[in-house]
Image (cartoon, rainbow over all chains, first blue to last red; front, side, top):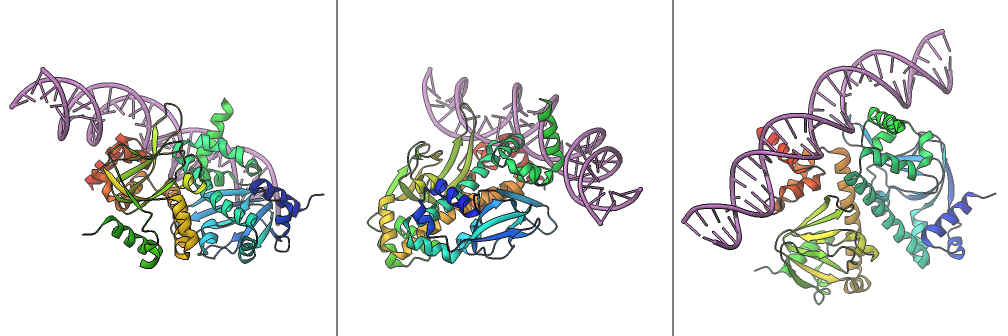
Length: 196
Length: 196
DNA sequence: CGCCAGGTTGAAGCGCTTCAACGTCTGTGG
DNA sequence: CCACAGACGTTGAAGCGCTTCAACCTGGCG
């Protein structure tokens, strides 16, 4: 049977080319946490102190732009991905976003001070840290490019490819929000696509 | 008379709180370069080896998404800003974008190896490096948020606030492209705004 | 059973797109 | 010095897709 730690080891090997010896340095620090549907990974206005790895479940990161305004989903995170409020974590500033578990979820997480100690201790972990920052940048850059160059329908297809876990797990109107459109519009897009 | 270096010194003091002694370490490395309208800061498919500071002029960074497809402007950079192909520079990978001077422009620039030497030499320069990366992240994040939460008209007003230099310097259709709309649409938006 | 959350559908409206025509300004050559 | 060309901005007309509001349907659950 594969444990959460095994999954994480594999994921980090793939992501940063980290060998077992380096990974083992981190073993004392990872802890497991379980979320019920609707619980928050990181509360709004808190400083994000942990970096997480999703073992199972789906999270959405959203923002309420103004009083009484509609929530908009900035991104989804699913199994096998790193979850962290990047801006808040990198800058250790209060978070502008909400990150909510959309399903029963479980993660492994590490505290920022332990992670920084690993950075200091090991060149491979330092590389991991750089890659996380670059990934955050690339993730947002990719989202930006999607909005500049793709139609809502294309974004929908892209999302289905990247996050197949999502579709039986979260309400359609949250997906629509991520795509930058309204619920009924996504409903019609689906209908058009099915007709082909 | 204030020289380019004075402008840069002031800008970096404001941006990173750097004192004169630390800044002076960099004096041997900055070089000045002038661009004619239409020249490129960094060529497509090249690795970006320099970080620049705009003394005067306007650059646009754009991307051609597919063969025969329309160019779309990702961002503008104007006087007093840092100019660099962030992704290419940070990762030292070939650049996906074109960065073109829209007016006669002048910059100060530093080579990446000299800059990295400053990082190694000085804590204040290391901080500068971190701030550049965070700024790149925040810049793109801000653009992303603009697209999620603002109308084209609001984006237009925001751009006028951030880059007042642009409006007499670049064609309207480039601005429209940055805003994610077509030339005629921006023309009509202006008309509607003038009517109020 | 009846409620409620979530998805679909219809109708009206609005804003952006597209294509084409028409101004306007500027620089250049006869 | 004028005329023309080219680049750029504006305007009109038609179309399309997303929005909004509201009604209705469905399935899950107390």
